[in-house]
Length: 396
Ligand code: LMR
Image (cartoon, rainbow, N blue to C red; front, side):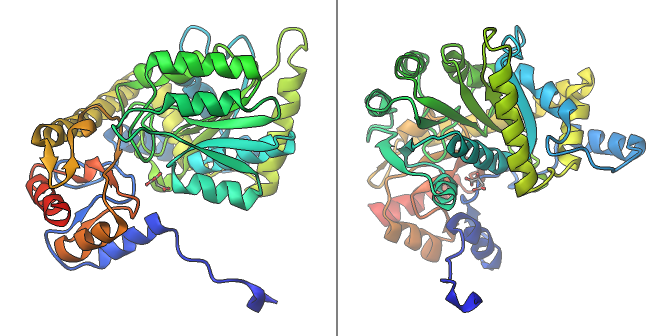
């Protein structure tokens, strides 16, 4: 039977990790997969996480099952950061559950939307390549619109046209902040217009929030998608703690449903949550506990919370320093680096061809995604000049 299977190529981003690891050149530069790196090129465990993990080891008295929704203390503790401290449950219209990473949350969101009858999803491209892979695997119909203009600004006309051309029974996938792969986020006014268009047409918003705090700050990065949530009756939010708590391999995520009204007495929200619960049970049964439990301990302790936010601030400051330095450089060969100074988060796209990406890897030991995406956190004051010179070399 198995001989009928077609071979699949490895995920291109994850394959880069292995290619880079196998390269013996001492001055190699990894701008591939999205992990934060310090100025020394390391991806350390947050001190706040280390302290919480120690506390977990000392105090956890059982590893018995929790259920498909996972650690609800974690899910609830995150809500003020995502939905705001004024009314984190949005008048009782939010229900959430823990998921295996942000990917688990995206998958659950799309599968539940499909189960609820969503006929088509609209998605800005380029997007995180795994979005398309999940959509295809689930068997959803989808249509692309352009996310970005060539000048490095967001193509808000395209997203508004997609929303206005769609209607109830169709969905739109939005990146909450720090757009992956372009780093180009909507401005507050653009988010306002997007929220209005969704409210007018009844298109279902699915918001992927994988990098909160890596752009301008925890509050600032939430304000755009919160303005949409304030205007719409229903939405899904897929959330990842893998970046803002540095938990990558521990797979820490959450899925939230916004639904229901006073009139229906939360019946719709409960129905949707019970379906999410059943889908989770049939997919992974229960999410892994450890990372979410550590995040819960941080968020319930004022000192650990302050430590975590301090570490997140440091990360953001370093990435912004790198971005400012690249923007200052102006151009490298035919590549204008100045837009990188105003983009957000780990990623930006360079206008380079797949062949130039190969040349950068083979001739300069610089590893980046074939799309031209770079992880700016892979750049340090030590390798920045080498990077700029190499870009100039292959594009000049
Ligand atoms: C990335 O885009 O590099 C990260 O989100 C890691 C991943 O799973 O692709």
